[in-house]
Image (cartoon, rainbow, N blue to C red; front, top):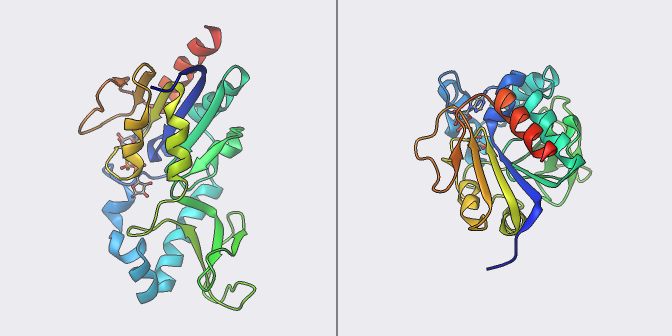
Length: 231
Ligand code: APR
């Protein structure tokens, strides 16, 4: 059993951490998957079939992200860096953790602010939250696509993310339904003796050994962070 680092916190987040910033989640009542079919907007086949529809779906999410600000949960997570080594591992594609000041963020499902070449996946372009349209080409002349992990594609950073869990003294899970793998499987990498917390409104199967603090991220996370910073 590897040793545990009481000064290290892994924060694992999902769409719920950005809900109070006004960004839709996926599986809540008014979630994105209640208004779109995954097969139409979030698979490689969808992009091959109707790239315009897929690009429009992500342009709408970039427009929402442009109007969103980090909320008190993002800010509290960033503040934890004053006293702890914090690694944020997020399923989210928004950049609200970075904008709140978190300096060590691993994205498992990509980023709205990046696009990549359809001819050469190693060609990745930082484009901010500008729209991405048909005719926006990479330097090799091929269409750019969102640098987002679609269903059926390999999740990025999963190995480095798993390594971060192993010695973390605290694991804080915020705003995820834990229904999507391999991301949700990372929780099993937590050290047996680590402190484990889950902050979310609903969860079908609360993960074993996690203390479920049922509530809104922007309320629960700041009070938890305050206690940890004063400890
Ligand atoms: N505070 C805390 N938790 C919240 C809040 C809030 N204000 N609002 C919603 N939640 C919780 C919900 O209870 C739910 O458990 O956030 C979770 C959102 O779950 P999902 O919509 O399934 O989002 P997520 O878990 O991030 O989805 C994972 O699925 O479609 C893919 O790639 C997509 O990254 C996404 C992945």
